[in-house]
Amino acid sequence: MSAGRRPRASWREALVTGLAGIGFAVFAVLSFLKADAWYLVLGSVMMAGGACAFISLAIQALRTDEHGGPGK
Image (cartoon, rainbow, N blue to C red; front, side, top):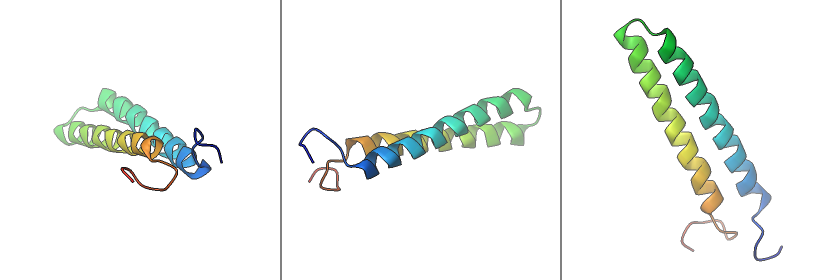
């Protein structure tokens, strides 16, 4: 493996969690547009938080080095 290439596992993890984050974000926006009660708005906000968590995991997966850990 060359020094500039990342292992497949980190790319795969980043892709899966990134797509999950995008899916959560789209679903949060669509459910917010249909929300007519406070608990539906709260659910949309929680889904948006989940989207942020998944996207941050995708960013962390891209930033890990090939030795398996951030900062090693």
